[in-house]
Amino acid sequence: MIEAAVQTRTRGQYIMAAVVAAGVTLGIGELLAGLVDRIPSTLSSIGAIAVDNVPTSIERWAIDTFGTGDKAALLLGIVASTLLIAGAVGIWMQRSGVVVAAPLFIGFGFVGLVASLNQTLISVPMTVLAAVLATGSGLYALYFLLQTPGARLTDTVVGEPTDGVPDDPSRRQFVGRAVGLSALAVGGGVLGRRLLTATRSSDVTLPAAGTLPGVAAENFFEIDGLESVVVANDSFYRIDTALIIPRVPVDNWTLSIDGLVDNPVEFTFGELAARDLVEDYITIACVSNPVGGGLVGNAKWTGVRLAELLEEAGPTDEAEQVVGWSVDRWASGFPIETVFDGREPLVAIAMNDEPLPARHGFPARLIVPGLYGYVSATKWLERIELTTWDGFDSYWVPRGWLKEGPIQTSSRIDVPHKGDRVPAGEVVTAGVAWAPLKEIERVEVQLDDGPWLEAELTQPLSNKAWVQWKATLTVPDGDHLLRVRATDGTGEIQTAIEQRSLPSAATGHHTIEIKARA
Ligand SMILES: Nc1nc2c(c(=O)[nH]1)N[C@H]1C(S)=C(S)[C@@H](COP(=O)(O)O)O[C@H]1N2
Ligand SMILES: [Mo]
Image 1: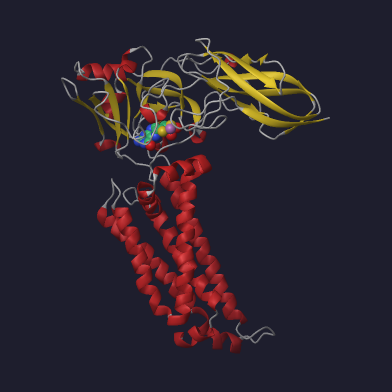
Image 2: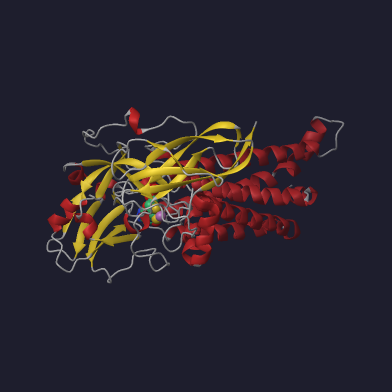
């Protein structure tokens, strides 16, 4: 029966069957990973291996080209390649029979499994089971599709003669099943990815919020398109090397402080949460943020003063560098002076009054005001190691970035948006400006080669937080360039010299084109 069916099938159907079956395998795999904490995503696991083996130049190109979408691009690339290979398997099946599919599917499942077993914090038996289930679903989908018309061809044609081509109903059935399975694959995959990136911090209770004043009227401008002065957790930028967001089981988690200390210490989450917690509005930024880019945000962070924890451990006289290690073996490193110079770095356990979202470092992360994230803001923190300055280079330093990473004074135009068409005449422009610790003293905007006009500023939420600015310009009919620059509390004006981000953050004035029309 199946033999006969095989004869009547087109090449397109073989290709479609193989592609859909591969899609089902991927979709079910992601779904299982999303549903069960200790099963890693196969896609992300393969991506992680790709990232680990890719030269830094390509990694940097990907970040520059796709920005925060670099991971999505990589994962989509892996999906597309897999489906392409599946298409080739389809063609091969037409030539050599359906039997060739089984070993190939199992082979692929095995590759995915090996990649997954490479991840940390997983259960090996559950991961193996997931691989078997995902591969099995794919093979079953293939069988389900290729088994359709041949067996039923006679029945349908006899039972219900139509004026169409004789194999029309069977073809329709094939397409119907293919569409259904594709929906299953896409639905499972999308749901799985959503679950994978979802917060796993609901079982944590935090002490009541402290006494930090909330956002008052003088702290923000209400302007459409202007970034919020406190960025919501869901829209806060995310940058890290983790393809799989570590989901740290908080019950077994501890933070240890060791290295060049007299008294190594270790804290559970409960112990940290029970201490005196400090709240602060702190703007953090990524060194690879391009001028005008969105890899910067301001949040209310709650945590334990790092100084207090280090004092308990008692750094020795040789200790010069604080290294923050994450559960996924990523590290940042910053000078120990920054812990005791009054800026008050935090071991943060809450972001905007919620437990840290998984993507932002649950259960704990470092936040050091005034330093870029790559040298300071370790997420999924599990160990703080004290060492000498020369004794260790953290993750991005051997990759060409400067070892010290103070945040540059910067400003950005949010409104109007680049390329926007605005009515000629009075145009409201607005944006954000930041210089954590130094504070923003002045923001100025310039239309074409006109004079620099001073913008109005919001009251800063703290000396570590950004401010919003706004200005009203008279813009004549025509195309114009609008630029912004900030001056910080040291009196230094943001440089106009354009420089790309490596090795120390991009510089230059954010400049956008606008089209004013009468
Ligand atoms: N574990 C870990 N922590 C990390 C990173 C990382 O790759 N791994 N990236 C850092 C960088 S480069 C930045 S800019 C900030 C970004 O923090 P966010 O994703 O919460 O905005 O996290 C830092 N902490
Ligand atoms: Mo970063």
